[in-house]
Amino acid sequence: MMVLGMTIYILVDRQLNKHPTNKPYDHEIVHTLAPSLTFDRIKRGKVLARGGFGTIYIATVPSIKALRHLYFVEKHLILSQKNEVEIETEERVMEMVKRDPSFPQLYKTFRYGECVSLLMEYFSGGCLHGVYSRKATSHENSVNPPASIFQENTVKIWIAQTLLGINKLHKKLLIHADVKLLNIFLSGNHAAKLADFGSAIQIRSSAEKCVIRTYSPHFSPPEIDADEKAASQKMDIWGLGVAAYMLLTGHYPFLLGPNKLPIRKDYIPTTFSGWQAASPEAQSFVLQALTNDYDSRPTAADLMKHSWFKGIDWNKIADQPVDI
Image (cartoon, rainbow, N blue to C red; front, side, top):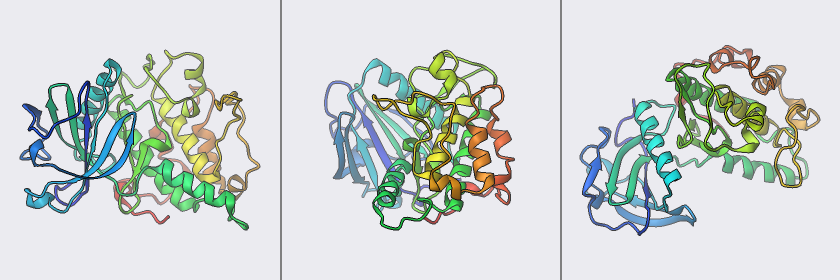
C-alpha cells in the first residue's frame, strides 16, 4: 500500500484554451489518497521542461506537513477532443490501480473550467527510455565497451516488474496498448513502474480484439500493422518483448526503412554482442514475446512462469531495488 508522505508526487495540469491560474479549482474530483489537498496550496517552483505538451514544474505544498518536503510537477497541455478522451481514460485506469505498487499513483484530480490537474506520484529515476538512451550512447562511444549496456539481472528485474503490471491490467480486462520504454518509469530505487494509460482499452473478455485509437509503430505487433481492429492484450506482450531486446542489446530489434519506421518484423538480429552475451533463458523469453503469430504468442500469466524468472518472488518484485 502506498503511504502518503513517503513518496514523491507530480501534479499534471492539462488545459484547453488558457493558462492555468492560481485560483483554487471550483470543481474537484477527489481521490482518497490526498483528500485534504486543494489546488491553491500548491506552490510552483523550478521549470523542468517546456514543449508542445505544456510546461512541467517542480512544486511543493508547504502548508501540509506530510507534503512539505515532497515534490510535484505541474504540466499544462493544450487539449483536443482526443486528448480529453485520453485524460478520462488515464483517470479511470489509475483509479482502478489505486494503491498498487506496480503503477504510479493518482492522488487527486482537480478541474477548473477547461483545465484538468492530476496529482500523481513522481519518479525521480525518470523514464526507462532516457536511462536506456544515455547508456546506449555511452556504450557506443566507449573504446572498450562491455558486451551489454545493462547487466542481465537488471534487465530481468525491470522486465519482471513491468510484466507483473501488465498481468494485473490484463486481469482487469484492460489493454495498456502502448507498452514501450518511454512509458516505464523508475522510482528512487530504480524499480520499474508501468505508466501512461491514455491509450488503454477496456475489453469484455481476454480474447477480445478491438480497434486501437493510436499506437507506437516501433513497439506494435504485426497484427496491428496489418489491421488496426486487431488490438488485443497480446500487443502488450509484443511491446514488452521489444523493450527487453533493446535493454539487452542496446539496439532496436527490427530493420528500419528510410522513414525510420520498421519495414519487417519477422527477423530478429542475433549478431549484436548484447544478444550473444544474453543467457539462453533471456533469449527464449524475448523470442516468445516476439512471436509473430498472435495465437501462439504467450499471455502475461504464461510468461510469468518462464524459466528466466526462476527465483523471482512475484509478491515482492514490484518494489525490489535495481542496481544500474
